[in-house]
Image (tube, rainbow, N blue to C red; front, top):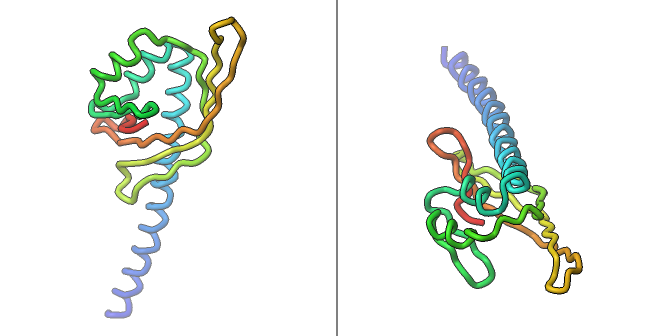
Length: 143
């Protein structure tokens, strides 16, 4: 009886481990899909609307030396910025063991016209922290 109990316990742990790995990969894909939808929203609706739509209520943005706290301040910061010329792609995603936080990083490309009308391109690295919401969606808490 004891041997059978040990065998069942080991089997349960193996099955749980497999489900945990599958769940983690599923959550990673959800975050990548959210990032891709974020980019799509920006290109369709502009910077202001996209950054508001994908923000957690308590999200912060770090822009240079400035920290922008909460959706109200994000709204003010991007009020007159409706560019659609920003693109990024996730190079890496990780999810916490608890499955409710994740982070991404990758390269972004921002295209714009300078003050004399020349087309310019700025590239850099982004890093975003994501939080799983009660409704099952992901919102950024830090960008």
